[in-house]
Amino acid sequence: MSETRVVITFHGTTEAMAWESACKKHGLPGRIIPLPVQISAECGLAWLIRPGEKDELVRRALELRLNYQDVVELK
Image (cartoon, rainbow, N blue to C red):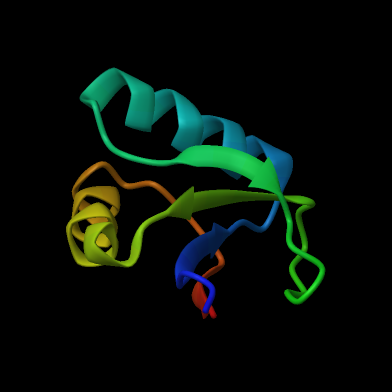
């Protein structure tokens, strides 16, 4: 059985890089990964987190005015 992963996608590389910078600065979880083949998005990068981190990270993204395209759960 594989672990569920949460992937946050972006409209472009600039959004992905801003997300990475802000998360590092504010001690938020996750890391940049190449976009998984199961997902269609405008940018070839994504942010990977564990399922339990999703709600808090999305809330903090809104507070920090970080843009993203979608939040996808992969099984």
